[in-house]
Length: 261
Image (cartoon, rainbow, N blue to C red; front, side, top):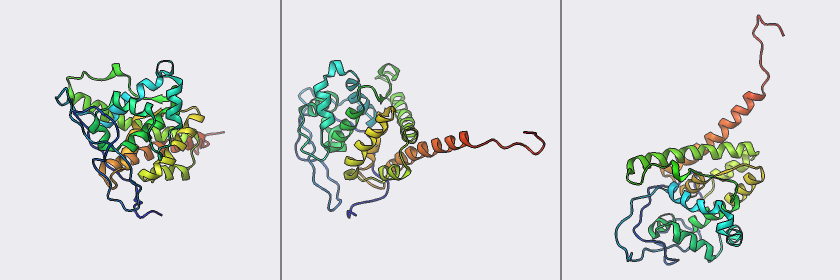
């Protein structure tokens, strides 16, 4: 077992950034975990336009990235296949990956989570695209000018997606052992466990909750954070409540003492 392995945990904060993503460079922050493989991320670059955009939650960023993947005719079968073939532990040099991040993220948003984390999220979404992705529609969002309402909207949708992911995994037939491996996965473990789980979910005809995938990956970055614990606990509640519902539906109904069969 690696020296850095910990129980469920991670960190999540609102991410914001005044600079558009512009490519790979030296990492802005690295985990202090020993024996973990060093990986590249991005640093901030000057923004020629200037000005700070409003802060965006992880969920909102993930939804923006997912949207074009649902239109294979416009996004392109070739680029989508490239993202599906992506190795989350590899060089991460795929042009489509960088183009997608450049168009839909700011550079410090990528730096906050780490470039490999976003690459893993995008790879997972591509495995479920174009027909098995689930995320809020743009027209359902509060107006851009109402930051408070938008914060509530994305927080609520994220919590719902986390429970939805757990439920979908149970309904797809994912074993408790594999489910536990997924929830206990470190950032390095997720590079194998998450794509494998997504393929299983899609093969069962289930939809992948985009927001929950982004939150799950983010939760592995900083172990023991309260937010990260809550993400994985909600996913677990979704799984086990679905199990309880299935058991109650299949259990034979008992007759009251005074009733006849």
